[in-house]
Image (cartoon, rainbow, N blue to C red; front, top):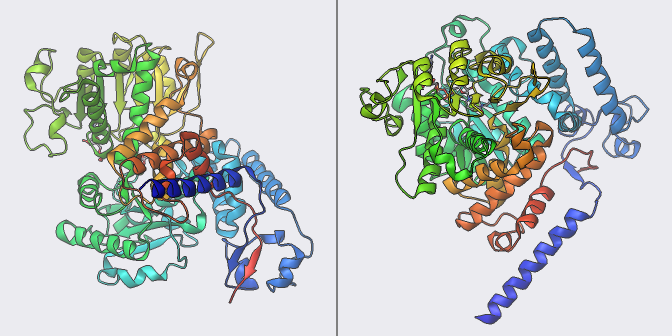
Length: 608
Ligand SMILES: NC(=O)c1ccc[n+]([C@@H]2O[C@H](COP(=O)([O-])OP(=O)(O)OC[C@H]3O[C@@H](n4cnc5c(N)ncnc54)[C@H](O)[C@@H]3O)[C@@H](O)[C@H]2O)c1
Ligand SMILES: O=C(O)C[C@H](O)C(=O)O
Ligand SMILES: [Mg+2]
């Protein structure tokens, strides 16, 4: 017995040592095997280096004569791209925002289609500037115009017509290894509604963030659109619409097609993590329940958003100068009882129960398009029911079933007003002024709906009407606000981008069979504790997007550790749960960091 333990821990120590060395020794990029030659390489964005191919490589790969003779370094290519991007910015000055954003998206997309290594290098180094183009909010505009913008396919497209054949279609994907999959059916794209096949832009944007923030190798990501029709009449009538021109599948027909796709994905890539994204309410919860114990999957809108919002809500308590345990006394009004709003409330209830050791009945209020939700409401969805308020409780405040937002804010006087309704401007002047009159020293306003026009209020309006003392977060980026007192009103981007890349990365590296609640909680706690007291006092609850790779490594490590503790981790390559269990927190972060892909030109080695 003793002998076995000693032998095992020696091996563990050796593995940890090897990783520490790997982390600290700068190494040559590993060679990359390529099964093609000549022009085929130039036309493959995974391998293409444009004018960056060294002469020896041109010789080896049959590229001589196919490129101008001069070799341009990676750094020079980078500079050249950035120069053309900056000149586009200058040339489009004064034009409408949408036109400028789309022009920026086009130039980045062209690079993405041509040379992925350079694309991800510019993306990572300029994430602050480029995230709003390849991700929220511009990605919404791209989805709305997708059929017109379409030039080249990206990812896989499955449709209702593929039923019965998905298991074979899946093998049409050229990469033998896939780590991260983001899947949508296009039914609730941001706050823009049903965009059918055009919703493919969302998985593409999310996976770009996976590469940029979590260092997932872009050769191992797979965006998927499951086109089961659309109920969007405008799209159905559009002769250039690229999806199925029929109404969405419903009921058993719908779920059986998702079942088939999930089975096919699992069969070919059993270790891949699958993120569900932008599914309409009725299927978001149903599919999560159906698959979360069977596959390594999570729903970003429900679970990723919850963790990010919770980190913000705990930040509000800290900003008020109260101990975290005071969270149980916070009055929070959540506007929007959909996938996102319910996800947030569910996690917030769990935290309160954890803190109080009892079944929670906190002062959290839920509003949907029909107003305040109470037990009196008939026909409430079972996922909403636990958050409906007891009628007598709201009566004592002078409220009733269906009370409107303004009334609720006036009577409840919440510490936090959190919007996940998809309705732009719903936090209007009156509502914001009512927040100013709440008793909180630092009222918090989270206008989390996307894209920008769907935000419940703008940052400027929040500071103007609710007072310069407010703390503010929004799903889409807004500029910081110059306040009349000469200070800066800080804008937090309260977006699930701060968690989903780390959740996916941690799940992947731990080899987790499933994504558990404690892995998700670990992610949220990690984000919540990332900000210093000084940051919090300045109203900063989330890191700046420039540090997204750093926070993602931390979140990834936290998720990985939770998976090991919960014993859902499995060996993936040379490091298994045993070795991971023996790593300190710092070693885990270091391990996760060494596993992140970074864009450099690897020497290409041809193999038949
Ligand atoms: N910031 C983030 O990270 C993040 C994450 C997920 C979702 N979101 C955004 O949240 C929004 C909602 O997403 P979802 O998946 O929950 O959508 P959903 O369709 O599931 O839910 C929307 C909810 O809003 C309610 N609603 C509609 N009109 C309302 C009104 N006038 N007043 C009050 N409530 C109203 C609906 O009744 C419904 O309960 C979207 O805009 C999405 O972009 C943001
Ligand atoms: O995509 C985003 O920016 C966040 C979120 O997943 C959403 O659906 O709005
Ligand atoms: Mg989403």
